[in-house]
Image 1 (cartoon, rainbow, N blue to C red):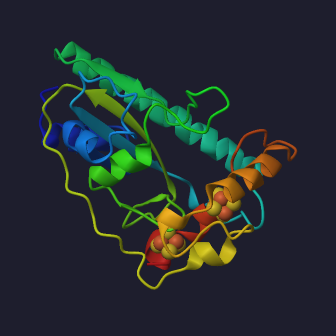
Image 2 (image 1 turned 135 degrees about the horizontal axis):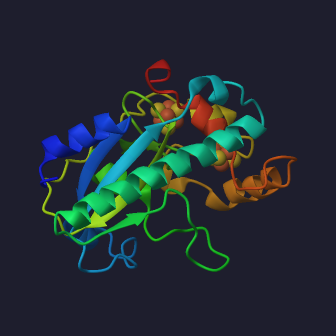
Length: 224
Ligand code: SF4
Ligand code: SF4
């Protein structure tokens, strides 16, 4: 696979991805040094991949995550991890250094963060914008997506960040059970959200920090 965007579109089609985009890591590092502190300097580019979540499962969520949603969340992560792994290997076989960043992996003891934020990478790649609940909002699929990334030194053409299109929509704010979502993503109450996720984690057949309530609300064209 040669490093050009057409190949990436083809790769996305072959693997049933809902989104693919490229981030200029060197540029982003200057704007958000703290957020990229754990990304090794040898990687100048991130390829962000996204898969869609299944609407019929998301639409069953009311005031808590359902066991089916938990399963969907894990399967989406698993699917992304397999595709990212494949992409990293293809790049490696073409002569580029690459690592796949898992869709959901905490890398700090007792922390809440992974190696790098897929939302930030996806935003910088032009896949969507950061909505009020700090989720990456895709213009077509809303927040009903999951993402992973491949860090590489392959010279892909980066995308351009998208303007925020939340506009007058406040669907997510209205449904959050702990009022964590505010007018601006910068005011998002992460502690309140995390406390609720801790509660949800203890529900039967859940066992992980998932919610899905604001993901359900942000359904793309229906709320935009
Ligand atoms: S994940 Fe749940 S608790 Fe957190 S902001 Fe969204 S709706 Fe609120
Ligand atoms: S539900 Fe509306 S306000 Fe909330 S993130 Fe999505 S588009 Fe933005």
